[in-house]
Image (cartoon, rainbow, N blue to C red; front, side, top):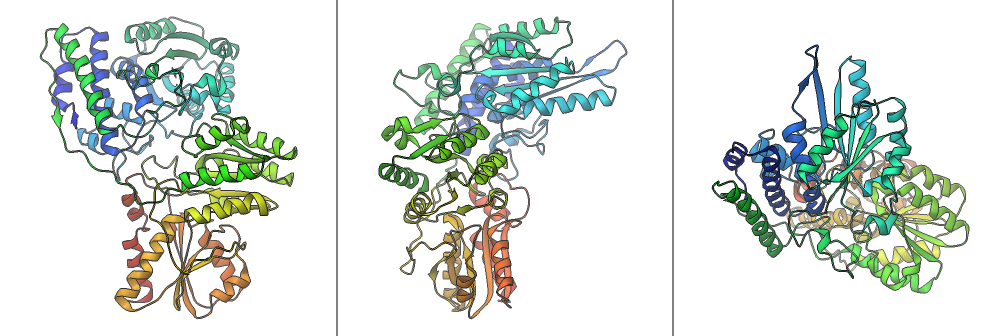
Amino acid sequence: MSYVPRDEFERIRSLPLDSVTGASLFADLCRINSLYMIARAGSGHVGTSFSSIDIIAWIELFELVQSRKDNNDEITKFFFSSKGHDAPAFYSAWIGLGKLDFSFLNKLRILGGLPGHPDVSIPNVVTNTGSLGMGVSKAKGIIEAQRLKGKDCRVFVLTGDGELQEGQFWESLISAANNNMHELVVIIDHNKLQSDSFVSKVSDLGDLKAKLEAFGWFVARCDGNDIAQFSRTLSEIDRHKVKVPKVIIADTIKGKGVSFIEHTAMKPNDDMYKFHSGAPGTDEYENALKELVVKVNRKLNSANQEELILHSAEGQSCKSMGKQNLIHAYSRALVKQASKNSDVVAMDADLILDTGLIPFKKNFPSRLIECGIAEQDMVSQAGGLALQGFIPVVHSFSCFLSSRPHEQIYNNATERTKIIYVGTLAGLLPGGPGHSHQAIRDISSLSSIPNLTIIEPSNEKELDELLEWAIQVNQGSTYIRIVSIPTEKIESPKSKSEIIKGHGFVLEDGEVFGIIAYGPIMVEISMRVQMYFKDNYGLSFKIVNMPWLNFVDLNWLEAESKNIKDWFTLDNHLIVGGVGEKISVGLNKINFDGGIHNFGVENIPACGRNDEVLDFHQLSFEKIVDQIESIVGL
């Protein structure tokens, strides 16, 4: 793997080039380093980083220079991305400019390094983003603060076009115009694709310019990958003297800069853009690097300058944790249930690949409703479907499905209908995307919804059985929490298959000590802990897999607690509001007089490799063993 070193950035930036050529070269150097960072990390967002990097290069190089007014007061300037997926592009630009230490080039998505989505702990990051739709509102708050301080400012906000499906974006436009926020410049990276599909196929924006103008904004449009045209457009809106907020619709190409990554290379029959998220394969990386280097050298040759010198580094392997993939298992299970029941309708929030819905779409195309990046709208649509006798199965990432449409989920619950909510990317892992995508609040949040049963399978067989229970047996609504990363298979000859609400599955019998866990990560760790204590101390821990996350049968709990001196609970969630707290309450109700020890997340989740994140939060096998040894005095 290769990257552009610091001295090459310095050399090329010092060349006697015009501003447009210099910015274009700088953007391509940042493309090389963004590609390197994502490939090294094993995950990231190449497509959106490449589409926006020309915009980022120009603003960072020429627009953020602090300017002075006639009274010698500085105009403070801010620039940030609302979409957050393009964090590698910003990081590579800051590293290239010396605004971020060069060592961070090797620290994307690792503990103590650069988070997968922006976080204010990193120098130059203005505000946390990643949860879409918040950027313009954050900018308005910054402007109001500067006005209260009696200072002038200018705020540039970069948004995505798929992001415009979020209701908050449109809500934020009104008061910005009403309050004459001329300090605000919003730039829409209009690369025509959202996560996997074309925006026009998911939720067409229509005449975007006319819509924005109707909100009272001044609107300009340009080619966002043509730096000369983009820079002229910025100058033109500066000359617009009416004190209103401004927006530039910057038409771009997703993956711009590498021919086979550009979305314009998609074939007519391609339904999915393959470079939205994840890392390129080895051949893809090498071919992309060659293409970028040729492009940079062509520009340097035209300027009679020496060609680019790259440095090489060893790549690192990002291995999966194991052999079972619950998303694939869910795909099969949902198709099986839909084959049995024609009332089953699937709904998606622009995550058809990540939520495992592609097989469903192929088998039942008329029964898949693509709602786009609009969870509140999706959940209320599900409410309407349920009132008409259908069984909606609603999909998104757990972090978004449990929080944004919480009020809509509650409203549906008051109608006493039946809806299945499926939250993927559940829990602390993967740790790379960062806290905006780590779902560690969903159990506590959704436990407040009446008549909603929250469950999490720990293996493929259990997932199949629990989905069948939710659709065919449960009379109320269900939230199914699914871990997305591959995990180790959990097998035990003592596991049960009978589904009884509130009853956990005893995987290993034991006396004196017991562990209650749920989901593939924590249950697998608990099984390893059991083996450790048996092999090293001759102790047999009772291991309970508890798939019911907001309900425990007290009679069952009392029966399983006989002869247990200490219970330990493992939460892939915050301890506050997690399963461990619910188990503790149940144990108190049955007058359990032993020890209760809850392990789980206690603060904002860390970003990093999966093993690093588990260890940081004291939830790795080693850290749990250490804590239990300390508690029991071994």
